[in-house]
Length: 268
Image (cartoon, rainbow, N blue to C red; front, side, top):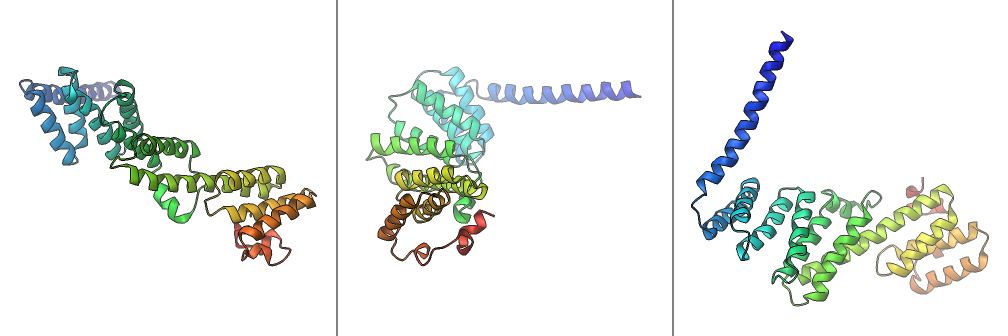
């Protein structure tokens, strides 16, 4: 009985493979007499209809038959976008990077860089939820930095691009995210009693992410860390900076302890 089941299973598997091959052959057969213009138009229609898998197939057929020219170049870019919309960031990133390598002087370079930024920006599908909840601890800062660099290239190299304004807005969110990642790490060090490491992380926020909402907490954290490290002069200097920049800060109301502050919950 087991042998019979095994034979049946192998037969079904081979049947499935044949079906897949048949689909590819069918696409190739249907389009064999199409011009490059017709192939691109059909692929673009599929893309606009959200039929991303078929769009990619048609773009691949176009590239294989007409490897040179503007339609092949645009097909590479459209393929990256199709993968991006189909929630396949790794394939999308590979496709857009291939385009950037092969066509560094392409007139749509601003869009290619912008698309690369979008792919990295949305690599973690819960990112927008994390923006709302301010939960940065498990967001990969590497993707944030790479996305920021891609958007920065758009703004710096193509300031008049139609994508520059949105790229600038996303860059601001990414800076906030990078600062948020640093504060999450600093809180972790404080929780562990690693006060020197916490102070260094907080200092990095103050120096590199000074336009984010984490500076006030970072200064307060530095003051407490310096006191724990028995460095009263550094603690007093930090407190003066906190008072100059945030005169209404609750951290200035008394000689506080972490448990007195709402953000103590991050350290528990």
